[in-house]
Amino acid sequence: MRKTSRFVAAIVAVTVAIAGFAAPASAEKKTEFKLAWSIYVGWMPWGWAADHGIVKKWADKYGIKIDVVQFNDYIESINQYTAGAYDAVTATNMDTLAIPAVGGVDTTALIVGDFSNGNDAVILKDKSKLSDIIGQKVNLVELSVSHYLLARALESIGKSEKDVTVVNTSDADMVAAWNTPDVSAVVTWNPLVAEIMATPKAHKVFDSSQIPGEIIDLTVVNTKTLHDNPNFGRALTGAWYETMAIMASDTPEGKEAREAMGKASETDLAGYEMQLASTKMFYQPAQGVEFAMSGSLHKTMDSVRKFLFAHGLLGQGAPSADVVGIAFPDGKVLGDKNNVKLRFTAAFMNEAAQAGK
Amino acid sequence: MHRRLINAYPSRGASLLLSALPFLLILLAYLAGSEARLAVNPNDKLLPAFSSIGAGFSRMAFEADKRTGDVLLWVDTAASLARLLAGLAIATVTAGLLGIAVGLLPYMRSTFSGFIAVVAMIPPLSVLPILFIIFGLGETAKVALIVIGITPMILRDMILRVEELPREIMVKAQTLGASTWQIALRVVVPQMLPRLIDSLRLSLGAAWLFLIAAEAIASQSGLGYRIFLLRRYLAMDVILPYVAWITLLAFLLDYGLRLLQARAFPWFVEGRKQR
Image 1: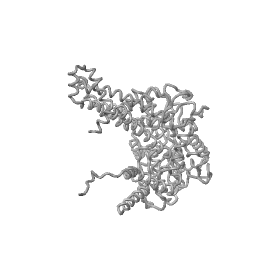
Image 2: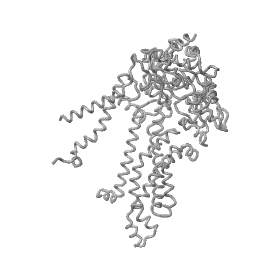
Image 3: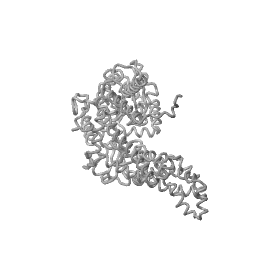
Image 4: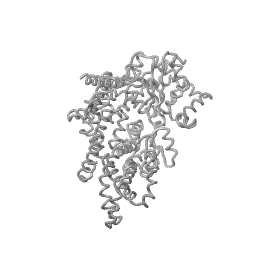
């Protein structure tokens, strides 16, 4: 009898322990924070800033500790953030809406870092017009920004996804896939675009510079954590814009920074600068503020949420694209005002802009 | 005298209870974890409540998809099973025939055994780009990956089993005047068939692994495809029932093979019991 009760107690203990592990970090005042980032042209500054003590300098200024962790798998970093293991993550506007926001994690876009201005592209083999894509199999990472770019490209010639066949293909295998005779059309991002364009039969027929400002790279933070710990936001923007200033400068120090970021993303200075050329970086906080305040952000997010809704990504049984509310710095809300889960803010970027003056 | 642990058997009821216990524990842990997370965030996607898992399953299994009009679970299951069964069939036939030949004929053994031992050690997933060039990215490639993945294992097992056949049987058949061909057909093949089923059962796990890996690379349908696609959106309410469904299919396949073995080769199963 005693044995049995001890056994039950053990089970209960184990269960409670597992449950404790599984519970997400709840926000309150705290001093230690974690930022997850992954390799992409517009997010390389985070790795560099962490390696060069800039993040630590700003964290120390506010008496906090910020752990900057690099993920090899972009989606996994967002999933970990959504599950509550991280306080901040780097993500695109589309994935931020579809993963944490739809998953009920109220998220604030703290830094609008850049938008893709040619970094994402539709590439055809042996054909040179976008309309040649009709009826073809198109290899891309399904439900990613590539998929969104394809939808927008088809829209631009009055067609829709029904006119092509989408084949989900892992980004890790995209270049190898392109080199097989089966594959005649791909949509992907840099540096894969550059690698595929270097093959003889590749023709770029559409790229993100034709939908400027729609594929946005953000650094996002858990809204509650940010609300309870505004200094975390200040430390992040401080470190970010100090790094931006160095990176943008035409000095040996700036060049060294760009070269290091290139190396960290498996390319060199020339390769990284080529990727930067097709990325509209907001080097100054004021540029980020202006973009966040602009009316075009409404239009973009509306187009993005409609795409997500059409693909069933706004949650099961979502009656319309309005289920998740998106708030903008001017106070306007797109969708359900009582269920705002994605917030664009210019406040922290603005503070950084004022401080820099 | 104190009874040794190796001789202590649970009663029938206790045995049933004990076998259910690990499942119950997992279930309990899941429930507790899920509730803790949902209390903080009712939209949590990582450990959804059983009701959302049920809703996710019924959406995939009984409702037509908005975009394609297909009922996705069945389309995925049909696509995956077709690939898996084709891969298993090709691998079994190839490994069965080649295994008997290599195990039986010294010339074949000299030629192939070293080669097979080396090739079997190459992890197929590490040479994917080469496989793409040879087999493309379509259905052929997916079946080929399964075949390449599991054939060496079945093949090596077959060779060992043939070599294990008692020497006396071979000698006896020869004194009775049987030719190589007759020995292969009348002595070796009947002995090998039930063992081939054993080997196939053991390679089922690997076959599923390669199937799902193949579907993750480039695909338009399939159970592995769906899981990798939905992973992008942390849709555990669909992923978890898919995992349970795959487990069930794999279990049924294994059970079916065991049944086939018992029906078709009762002498083999009896012989094993007596050992």
